[in-house]
Structure formats: C-alpha cells, structure tokens
Amino acid sequence: MSTAARTALIAEDDETTVSSYLDHYFARQIARAAGYGEHYRELWESARDAASGGKRLRPALLLLVHGHLARDPRVNQRADVVELAAAFELLHTAFVIHDDVIDHDLVRRGRPNVQGRAVVAAIDRGASRDRAADYGEAAAILAGDLLISAAHVLIAGLAAPADRRRALLDLLEGCVFRTAAGEHADVWASVSGSPTETEVLAVMENKTAAYSFRAPLQAGALLAGAPTAVLAGLGRVGRHLGIAFQLRDDVLGVFGREEATGKSALGDLREGKETMLVSYARRDPSWAAVASAFGRRDLNEAQVQQLREVLRRSGALAYVEQRIADEIAAVQDLLQQLDVPEGLRKAIAATALSVAGRNR
Image 1 (cartoon, one colour):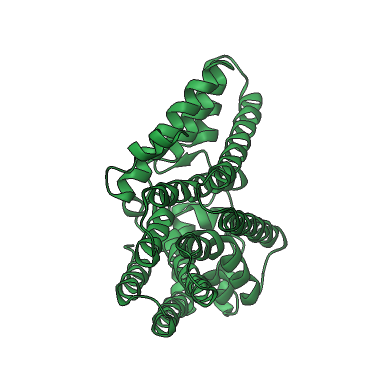
Image 2: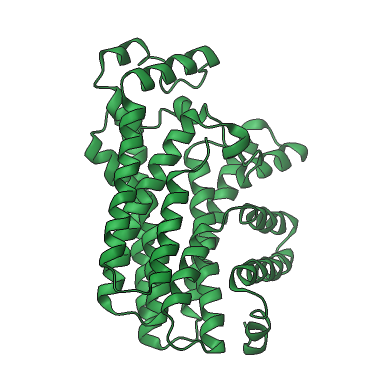
C-alpha cells in the first residue's frame, strides 16, 4: 500500500482503523479476484465475511500493548501497528476457516461459513451433494491458506526497521508452527481417545494461547521496541490468559447458551472434543454410563443432558472452574512482576477478568 493510503487510514482511533484497513484490504482483493472469474471473487467475498463480526480480540491486545510501550509515536509507526494488528486478525480468520473444515462445520455464528457457502453455491449450480462437499472443503482450505500468506505479506511490508520486521516475521512463523502442532495433536486426541490432562493442557497452550494471546501481546511490544525481559514476561502472561480463555470456551461449548456464544452447545459433545472437562470426568465411575454417547454424530438432547449431568456430578465442571480461577490468579501475579506502565497492567488484568467471566 502507498504511503499516502497508509497515512489516510490512521485518522480514526486504532481499533476502528484496523476494521477500516481490513475493509479496504478485502475490497482490493475482491476486485483483483474478479479478474480470475466469478467463483474466485465469491471465495474472497466469503473470506471477507468470515473476518467480519468477531470480537477482534487479537488486534485489541496488540494495540493495547503497543499504545502503552511505544516510545516514538510517529505516523509511520502508527500505520505499522494498524497493519500488524490486521495481520493477526487475518491469521485468526484463517485458523477459524481451517478449524471449521477439520470439525466438518458448515456454519459459524449462525450463518454458513466459507465452506458452507461454497457447498450451497455448488448445489445451486447443479453439482451433486458429494461433489459440492468436495468443492466446499477445497474452497475453505484455499481461503485459509490465502489469509495466512496475507498475514506474512503485511508484516514483511511494514516500514519498521529491518531487524524488527525480521523479528516479527519470526514471531508469526513460530506462532503458525506451534498452532499447527496444537491443532494436529487435538485431532489425534479425538482419534486415539482418552488423552491425559497434560496432553489436553499442551493442546490449549499450543493451539489457542500461542496465537490468540502470547503472539499478539509480544508483537505489540516488539514493534514498540520493548526490552527482552518485557517480551518474555508478556509471553508468560499470554500463556496463562490463553489457557483460561480456552478452558472457559470449553465450558461454554457444553453449558453455554447458543444465543450468547454463537455456537451450538451440542457441537463439542457430538464431535467428541477431548477437553479438560472430559479428561477429568473419565476418572469418575459415572462416565461409563455415558461414554458410548460421547462423540456420536446423532447425539440427541436427552443424551446431551445426561453427559452434562455427569460432567457436573463427577466434579469436572467445578474442577475446570477452579483451574480458570488459578490461571487468572497466575496472570495477576505475573503482571505485578512485569516492568511496564501501571495502565497496561490494569488493562491486561481487566482483560483477564473478562476472559474468565464470559457469559454462559
């Protein structure tokens, strides 16, 4: 993007500007894709819609850290932080698209996702259901790949000094590598069954904490020129925040209200998702009575209620709630040791409480 265009995009507050930047980015890509045919244009439109409507948690964390730590709030640095935040939102969107493929989901936030839209479009154009399913899966894989590539391109094009740009690319590459390891282990856990609590924890740390918390916090600090000790400390904070976030997500995935969470409260149980809730409940004799229902694609509401009851009576729900509280306490302790402005400590602490207390 030209210097003039970058400067024009920073007239508003940074979080609004990230949204404006992404709107502009997708508009350019959709126009570009139109030259390759209607289907490719539709793919990019689906990718744009997948990136809209979320909480933009990762950009918010990155902007928060950079805003408190930046020593030289130059115009070009502010444009850099907007582009960097946008890169992490594109990365998140890519992982969500790929995750839906892995989980065989055709809906996200109550509407057809990238894969679902492609399936519907193919059927409308006369394809059989099997061929439409193949097309939808391929479309979603390609869309995710394109957005991962885009995140790298955005960071490579920052105006930051070369060494800082290189460090940010290394951070992104490590983030992708580690998240893929977590996703791979998560899929294997559902195939092999009965992972240990240590294995479940490793999946959370690698799949969620790495790219949703650790990397955005560290990226904002890196661009701001923060010292190594601060980068390391934010990494530790991000690890505990990410684990708390995923534990809460797992609770909501079983006990949450669909209208509040935007996802089915049956999905995790139907998929046989190996969470810490399930890992703990397996130790209880009552699990044997519901074990055959866990992971059934035809799971009905009565079986869901039985599974929920076992997760409560076994102590699994109470155990996970305590683990969430412990992770948040660890975040608060680490923040007190971190050599950063008090305003940043308070803001991250508030984020931690928000993560822990998301509504059911």
